Image 1: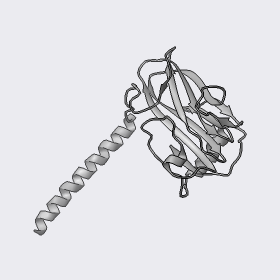
Image 2: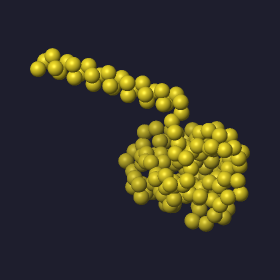
Image 3: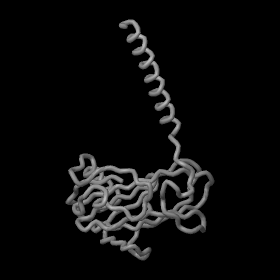
Image 4: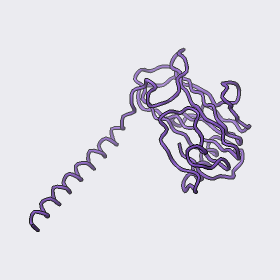
Length: 191
């Protein structure tokens, strides 16, 4: 979850929502910030960071698909100035009306789906809220299955780093090990 201060209103496209939100979260003020959510159920900025108005939201969920198939997503949101849902770079939903979920999976949600290939995918939610900061919940369904809330215990395989990131992490660990060995050697000479 990434949040920032924004007085922006409804946007002309999904790309405009993304740009407005990313500009707002680039340097969050007090009352806004960044947090890992162990469960994407009934969360909001007010409970996490304190502010309940002039909000720009960007939620991301990284997940791995092991078998190709149809995935559907739904997000109960409180985006008073509308918002968008993207899967990777594909727009699944875009709305400019007042989306106030209130805990019911009726019409005021962002939803969509795609057939996904195996591999890493990222669900993005971008939206703007002028006041009142309601609760958010985001769920997925595979095939014709029931909806499950995204969480650290949702039954999906843990997201693993991309190969390039794994190489970068291994390289960093190797550099730290060499630095530590060099420092220990220097310390022995000075004793």
